[in-house]
Amino acid sequence: MSDWRECKFGEISSKIGSGATPTGGENAYILEGISLIRSQNVYDFTFSSDGLAFIDDNQANELRNVEVLENDILINITGESVTRSCIVPKNYLPARVNQHVSIIRPIKEIADFRFVFYYIQSIKPELNSIAEIGCTRRALTKSMLEDIVVLLPPLPEQRAIASVLSSLDDKIDLLNRQNKTLEAMAETLFRKWFVEEENSKIGKITDVVEFNPKRQLPKGTIAPYLDMANISTSVFHPENWYDREFNSGTKFTNGDTLLARITPCLENGKSAYVTFLEKGQIGWGSTEFIVMHSKLNLHPIFTYALARNSDFRDYAEGCFEGTSGRQRVNVDHLANYEVNIPNESIIRQFNQTVSSIEPKLHANFMQIKTLTKLREALLPKLMSGEVKVS
Image 1 (tube, rainbow, N blue to C red):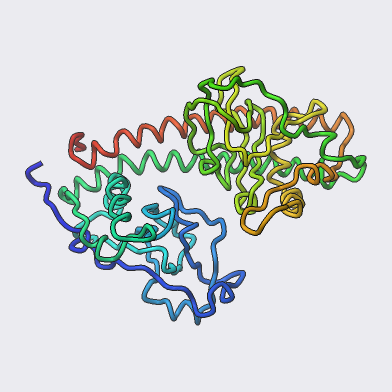
Image 2 (tube, rainbow, N blue to C red; image 1 turned 30 degrees about the vertical axis):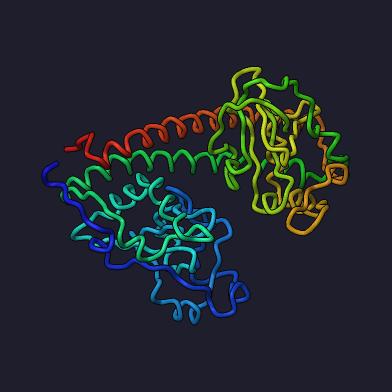
C-alpha cells in the first residue's frame, strides 16, 4: 500500500456544494420539467424517484450553479437522512439539487467517481459523528466535506475496486427491478379482476380481508422485530429486521400485509408483504402497523396488491383521525371500504397466476439480502486495502 496516499475531498473534487430552494418554494413545482432532487430522493446506493419535484427552465437557470452532471455523487447534508448518498441515473438528468443535498464532483484524472462514492459509504459512522458536532440539527457543511480525508490508491486500482463493488450493485439493482415488474403484474391483475371487472358483486373489505388477525406471541419472547423506518415506500420487502424481546406491538406472520396507519408514512406509501419469517414463526413490530390478511381463500398477495392500490390508499387517508401531524387511520372506518368480489372462477385464475409470482419475488429478495451482506463485508476491506484487487 506504499502507493496509496492521503488526500482531502477538497483536493480531489472540482465541486462540492449544495443547492437552493427555487423562487416560490413548492409553489414553483410543476408536473414535468427539470428534475429538482431533494433529500427524500437520495438513499444509500439508490436514487428514488418517489416524490421527485420538477421546475421550469427559468427556475433551473437560476439554479444553474447546482446542475447535476453525469457521475456526480449526491449526499444528504441535513436532517434525519444526513449522510445518505447515491449516484443519479442518467435518465433523471438534467437535474438540480435543493439546499438539503450536496454535489460532490471528483476530478476524473485523480479520482474514480465510483471509488469516491464507495469510500463515502465506507465512512458512514465517521460522517454521522461529524454531522452531530456543534449543530442543533444534524448537518454536514461544505468545509466539513472538503476536509474529509480519503486514502487514495492509484487510479487503475481505484477502478478495479469500484468495479468489484459496482458489479454487486448492478446485480442487486437488476433483482430489484425484476421484483418491481413482478409487483406491477400482481397489481395489474388485481385492478383487472377486483376493480374493473363489471360482473362482480360489491362487498365490504372485511368480506375479503381480516384486519389485525390474532397472533400468539407471549410477552418476553425473542422474536423478529420490524421497525416502521425499515418499511419501503416502493417495494414489498423491508430493508432490515432484528430479534428483540416482545413487549407490545402488532404481531404478524408470513403472508400478512403491513400497512402504515400514521401520517405521513401512509401517504408516503409505506407497506410490506411479509415473507422473511421462518415457517410458523411470529414476528412483531410497530403499533403503527395495520396487519391485513386475505380471506375467502384468496391468495395472501391479494391483500398486498389491495394495499398498493391508489383508490384504497386515498380512502385510507380519508379515515385519518387525531391532531394534525399525528393522525392515524381509524380501522373501523376503513372497514367500510367497498370492493368488487368476483366469482370463484376468477378468484382461482388470480390465485393460480400470483402463486407463480410470489416464489420469484421471495427468491429475488433473498438474493438481494445475500448480495447486500457480501457488499457490506467487502466494502471496508477493499477501501482500507486489506483485500487487494488486481
